[in-house]
Image 1 (spheres, one colour):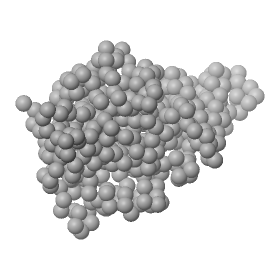
Image 2 (cartoon, helix red, strand yellow; image 1 turned 60 degrees about the vertical axis):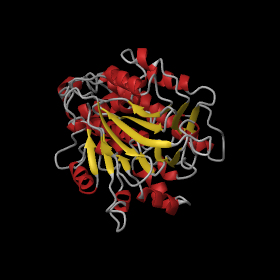
Image 3 (cartoon, one colour; image 1 turned 120 degrees about the horizontal axis):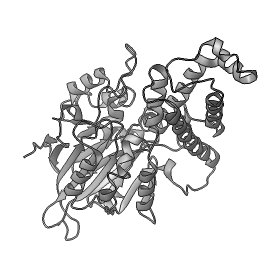
Image 4 (spheres, helix red, strand yellow; image 1 turned 45 degrees about the vertical axis):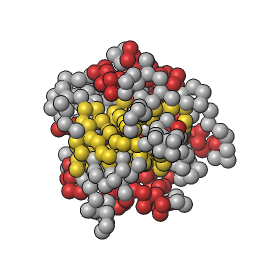
Length: 433
């Protein structure tokens, strides 16, 4: 104990669990005896699992590593691959026993958001995201699993937006009372009340009033999503758009369609598919930009966890915030970086990466963790949109020591790195056994 009251930090440990295409990170803050460790779980979900493991396996691992459940849970944002493990038939028996004392979520999840001068814009954004998820669910249900091309892309992106209701209910139950904290730029999540000696600075997402650009690619009103939802239903009901098959019916088969529906078929068939794809892509970007970005400090160790935050989220901290220079200085000293959005090209800003290559900082050891799975979002040939983006991985490996779930042997449940809380020693891998 330090000063007779504050537990003395000893070791910082991070486990990256093998959830395939998804995120699940456990931060363990260990103290000198007899003080017990504190555990913060950041995200728990998957879009596509790795071979040989499922989310129940990972839940068992987390339960064991935390001696009965994490002290705090952070949900970066409401995407399936970040939250599906919090609820569902195969994890409920384990996760349902956890009793976190703090649950951190983005401000867009707050069911009782206070009204202010920007309330209409904030409410519109939140309502638009909710309507977008309804639209995505409708798409996921009418497009066949076997769909390819534009239809396959639409279905994949639509499914990625869905968070199962059981997970939502579980998080809501944990968040009752004062345990639930909904954060935005500059609002501290009070992790130090759970883990003494550990602080967390929220550098994303900003609210609409802080940075109006976060509305980019989002709806201006719920009607934006309802328009497409209604249009899709009209097309499917009329048989004008058979999203369950790869081929469209020939024009000669469309003579039975009259009036507005026939006009839609003749004029907007290809265009409508592209429009639907654009709207679901916009929703995907919008939800990613609600990601909580945490800069966590434990002793001398600094760790950066950013969910799937994309540029509209990042740019407020990097370019426009009043305390920008202070934040940039903190980011220069990061020891461990959780690579954003599973290694996509638009989630690690060049401004951020350049901070780590400046004279005076580029010699300092750094560690990167990437939880991802190739082939889930392969992108179009030559477009550079595949996830993970190979050029990004190459750049990261040139500057940081990179650990990725892609390199785990089949059946191995996690990567573990640890570092002393004080001093200059970097994070190093803890080899199982």
